[in-house]
Length: 303
Image (cartoon, rainbow, N blue to C red; front, side, top):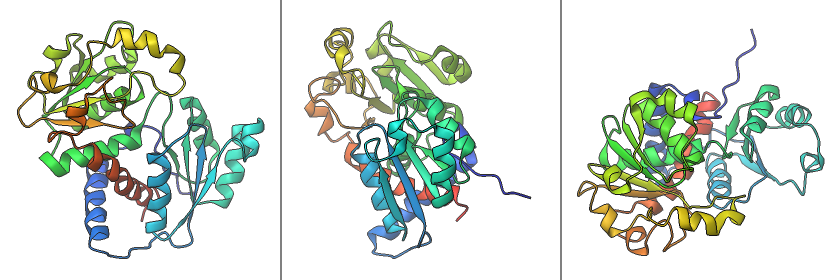
């Protein structure tokens, strides 16, 4: 019988138990790496990295991650591949997956990674689409666990656009049984079907101060994501009252953490005082992309 291939296209591809184990292993891998341990279970394994969107953290973390595990990364941009010249995704998926052991894709449409996975003979990882950013959530959850323990029963406040990061936080709330308050201006709400699927785990509270009260974690993202640059001025007006600053952090619990997937626009969605402040864990969060994705690759390959 042919073994089924595991993919990671959204957080919902994991069960709560699988997600917790993946994070636990990521923390162990991080500790071992810090102690100088050499662990190379992916020796002679290859990761194809398909980028339709530019990247810093995603590229560095995946490339460094598979290298630390003994494997090799192949960077593929639209300028360098036939995909960029219109090769059908099913054709590319069958060819690339026949030559590599795992594929990560950073692109625009969620349907692109879904189609690629459908025709791939190896695991496919969603490294960001317009709809979801599940790899970032692995790092975010890992960071919270390191700092505060289990997320179950916690209250998280999302401030800003109902974008791919917001959608992934909504999935996380469902999986790990915590409350997500979504503070967003009218017209920038998250996917309504996804919100309905969350039930009582997620709620839109337009008043950002009210949404932040009693929160254990405040999370935000840039007001204009990649591909939305032409909307920058319009979004600056819409999100003017949604900056995470010291006054807003005071509405949350005294020991509340602050996260941002980066890059950050200081003085827009977050003040420099918060980004560089004692409650901010953004640098730990960024580094944890490396270790969370090592754990993810090993999980998908059953290693």
